Length: 449
Image 1: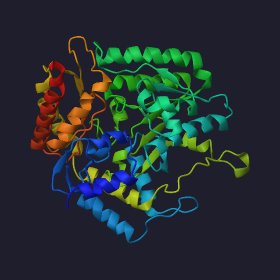
Image 2: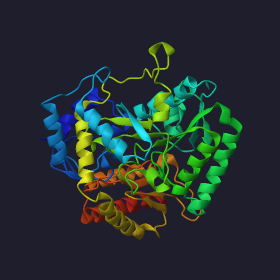
Image 3: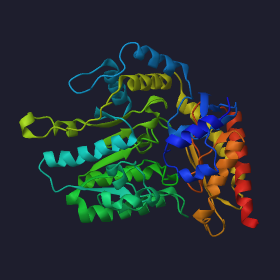
Image 4: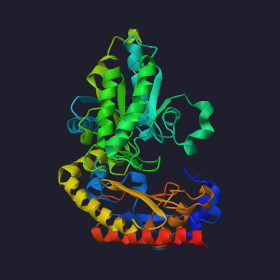
């Protein structure tokens, strides 16, 4: 069966996410028939190496037999039941496992449907906590420059990427924006951390009495351009939140479950946030599910007679969906059955080695890596760091070339990155980096023409 009939049907009825649909007048949609491991296959038999884990969700490859079987078994027993007044074994078991794996002290799980939902839960829970303990003046949040936390109104309010946020400013609440510890400056990771922490402290000194929490993406600010920082920043941020008596929300929706080299990014800083947000890879890339983990201290501020008006009356229809929980449990079982962190270190070293060939490329800057996340920037002038005009869409040229050569590479503007599933093989890494290199050569050659 050719791709074209599905593409024609699609363009009559679907509106795709994070897409200017006008592009698809010239950029063909790719209908996927099936997938296995790191490979996607369209209806014409062409394959595409999923180098970005299908938007960062897939951990152990597509169509993993253990996750498939777990969902099949659960489907024969219970697909879903409301989690208000009812419960089920998969949600309980998943909560128990997550609490056992998370930094000590995180002892309560509140499930959501997706990453943005988890962010909303944490924001509301933090603000409501302060209200419940008699500090209702605390209504503000601090976010980090270039951060991204999701597309719902609250999540977008604490984000700082204008491309996503600017059109909706009238809907959003105002936040304090602290400097990013982005390590791409001419300074060490520790210097970047100290600089950013100094800027954060200035905000906390001025506004500590009205602040609820600081929200941060530990180690990698993903959608904001794959900006990476030293664990010292997270450690210092925890200390500042303790000093000024406010919550720390760690958004590990994209960076959790081994992406940064440890199961949770916060481990590398040796800290425990007040709220730990997980999603994306939680179900191995199978089903939408997220979770906000928090402490007994937070939980107990809501635990009262109903008449006290302290209940956290937040809900999602599919909270703790049994099928999604079964997929998540199978995913955690796969982690437990092998030393995936050691395997990922080996794969990360191969990614680093292969990308090193681009260090002298005249239009490549800031090659950087944290665990299984690697990124670089296309620039017009490497000496000055001058960017290409966004209208030239050099990153889109890389994406097109990748699709023509069996690789799914979907850049963030002119930031190119690799975030593959953990089952990728060394030869597949070398293949996809070769495609990436050729794509960069082609996309930047037009600069000289």
